[in-house]
Each structure stands twice: as C-alpha cells, then as structure tokens.
Amino acid sequence: MLIAQISDLHIQADGKHKELIQAERHLTTCIQALNRLAPRPDLVVITGDLTERGRRQEYMTLKPLLAELDMPYLLIPGNHDSPAMLREVFHEHAYLQRGPASDSPFIQYVIDDWPLRIVALDTTIPMRSEGGLCAERLQWLSDTLAQAPEAPTLILMHHPPFQTGIREMDELGLLTGREAFAGIIAPYHNIERILCGHLHRTMLCRVGPTVASTCPGTAHQIVLDLKPDAQALSFNFEPPGYQLHWQGAHGLVTHHAVIGEFPGPHPF
Ligand SMILES: [Fe+2]
Image 1 (cartoon, protein in one colour):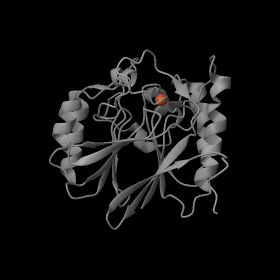
Image 2 (cartoon, helix red, strand yellow; image 1 turned 180 degrees about the vertical axis):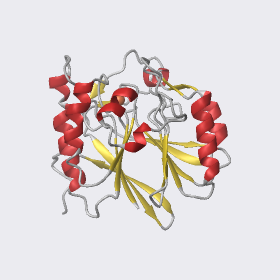
Image 3 (cartoon, protein in one colour; image 1 turned 60 degrees about the vertical axis):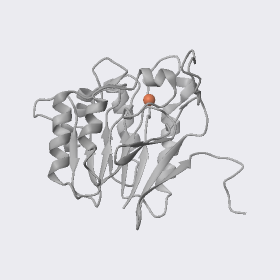
Image 4 (cartoon, helix red, strand yellow; image 1 turned 90 degrees about the vertical axis):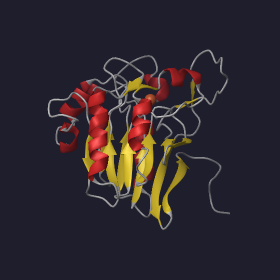
C-alpha cells in the first residue's frame, strides 16, 4: 500500500496573510504533484488545519480543490478547523460523521478497508490552539486498538504526541492526555506509524512501540528554531512538501518529497 500525506493546508477566506501565503495556489500545485506520481498512491491522508478559521466559506473553497485528487482522501481536523463545519460541508464523507460516541462533537473513526488499518483521532479543543485527548476519546482509542491487535495500523492525529523542541509549538502541543495516550499504545506492536501535522515541517520521534512523525505544510513552513528562549513563532517559505508512506517487505518506509520548481531535482 502507498499512502500520501499532506497537512496544514490553511485555506483562508480573508485576512492579512491570505495574499502572502496563497494557500489555494500551493494546494493546487501539491495536488498536481500527487496526481503525477507513479505509482499512484492508493490514498491521501490530510492531517488537519484544512482551513485557517474553520469557516464554511473556507471549506467550500477547499472542497473543489480536493476534488481534483485522482485518489481517495481522508480528512481529520486540526486546531484551526471546526469539526462541526467540516462535517457539514463534507457531509458525503460518512466517516466524518463518526465520533467516540454517537452524539460526540469530536471526529474519530476507524477504517478497515485497506491493508493498513486507519485509526483517526481528534486532538482538537474547541476555540483553543493546543491539543488534548479527553477520557472519552482515549477510551475509544483503547477499545478500537483492542479490536484488531495484529492488524498493521496507522494512527492519524493533528497534534503530535511528543515534545518537538520548537518552544512555542510545544506550548501549543498535545497538552492533555499525552501520557495516557502513551500508556494505551504501549502494548501494541502493530502500530506502524503515528502520522501528525501541526508542526509544518518533517520530524520523527519514537513514541513507545512505534514512530510518530509530522508532515510539512502544503504552503508555509515553521522556522526551525530550537532555541529554548525563542521569542516568537515564525513561518517561512521553505519548499513545501508531502510524505509518501510505502509499505514494503520490512514495514512502512516514509519518503519526504518537496513540491515546486527548483534547479533540481532532475536526473543527471
Ligand atoms: Fe497548521
């Protein structure tokens, strides 16, 4: 199985950075790059911050852009999203209607249709930038993993379950439920990867029995600044990218790819 991951699209209806970031143009370029891939990914997973403010207009802008993908895609919300508005605009995505309980505001789902079982968690907290996992969502994770302890599994979640070293993002990280999450996954050696967004750049970290990773943004990136006293979060236009998670003989291999026109890469 071949899975493409993109993240943090930040489609924006208005605002002072809309023209600067040009999120729609960048997403279109990204989708064109994914559609040119051979072999074609079986699936695209999009790990949150689909929009900048979770507005209907932003999801209505996003939807026809994603319709250009030649392969199916799965969505999860990030802290910039509105799970309720996402459900409403992408109403035909039946999996988005599921949650840890039937009336839950959170979007959590499991999909068993692929060689890799996909377990999606909602780490958002309404009106907050930091993430968290409450008892309801953690119990659902525990129950869901117990249903298929041998199946190769991917967990999708926007906020990564590890400290990144980028100070301001760690202050907006998964601040509640992280230790409980680690305890729940600890016995499971079938979790191939925990795929995350939020950080707008590639990172890897061992988390218990598996590896957690973050994905670049499709438009703007977060500056790599590991100073413990870094004053303010800043963004830049390092090349955007995506990841390809390829299931081979030795497990899941993650490839990082950049998007755009450069002097290279080209064969020589
Ligand atoms: Fe983001």
